[in-house]
Length: 436
Ligand SMILES: Cc1ncc(COP(=O)(O)O)c(C=O)c1O
Image (cartoon, rainbow, N blue to C red; front, side, top):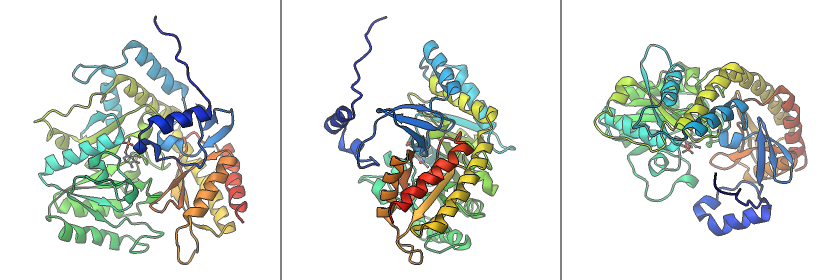
């Protein structure tokens, strides 16, 4: 064996200085707190900073940590694979990704044949789903929802409806429909006007023939915007009538997070043509996947599509272990029970603090939205930021989300326990009370 352990400077000042000097501006900007925070350790739903302070992680490292930080089953599976053969390109055969593809396909609605293409990340999977939909249908135009987030690559950005994430030079041929936000959507509450909008946009902003629509079953960065009953099925129907596919983005809402179902789209009984997944699939190991109906996947047979680390056996071993943990530790049921309890406590907070305009979500995908005035619903980014900073002092890590950064989003590891709920609710209460 060669090599001594590399020196690592754990001081906060040292890390801050190195980031400032060596990170490109594009990687420096997305920093949530006023003062930097170095995380040194994680275990299940908890994190510790470099000074040994403990936090409850309500962000799950951006929804990537699905079953718990450094979950021993997942770490063991990945370590054993990494020690044996860290990488095996998809050009060669390996049983681990092949098993994982079979296991993922088994989670999809019955009565269809499903095929899987592994990628390295969610946005790569989104890009691939875009190419697949366009190849299969022969149509170019795609639909996406305003306040959608589908990723940072230029193709995925073109589907993203939040200005702060859109950069110059994106490809086009994407038309946006109104997001059916029941709290502050442009057509108010209800479903029909939002479905009518899809028809209207197809008729006015596309060629009339579309490749598909991308829908997050629950919008994540958009601020936990749930698709209301009937929207997903209705959208699929309208898009299919225009020759397109229904593509469910389950990058945040998948793997049982919504509590009632493994996949968010199941809440509406819709069967998608393509499902995109990432983040929680690997519990922190980089991995994404496109799961498509076989006939749609087959349309890609004519050309090469090669993701260097797609089907990487170490990440896939982690992914298989995630599915195993979800099954054995009944994570989905836990998301439903603990999420239900937490939601009730958030509703209590809404009664008490008038800056809380809305409380919403399902399972462990929850949010509170701050407003300056409950009648006008003017978003309050300042109060959101202040509560967010106070929560840090209470040992709670959340996320500021939504197009106005006025939503506190909670997407913890799905092992969050009933015994954590008091600390979370009391911490939030103190944070709001301290503003008064
Ligand atoms: C709903 C959704 N889709 C796609 C992506 C892109 O995934 P990735 O960051 O792994 O490229 C994200 C990332 O946040 C997401 O939230």
